Image (tube, rainbow, N blue to C red; front, top):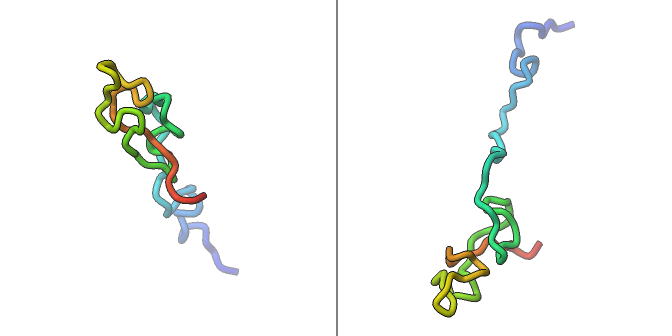
Length: 78
């Protein structure tokens, strides 16, 4: 029998060799035009269709993107 009590401390301590995932914490509030929270895997920023990226619509702040000019949308075909 092999004694592994002191030779493999990474397994015993619960350490992982994998990178840490996204950290939970405060995130930017979602705009009405966002499909998912910012930073969600499988999403990206796109120009707001309603204001064309200006953040303004009819002389006022665009309600779809809340003035940012961008929205978070799903990417890919999944």
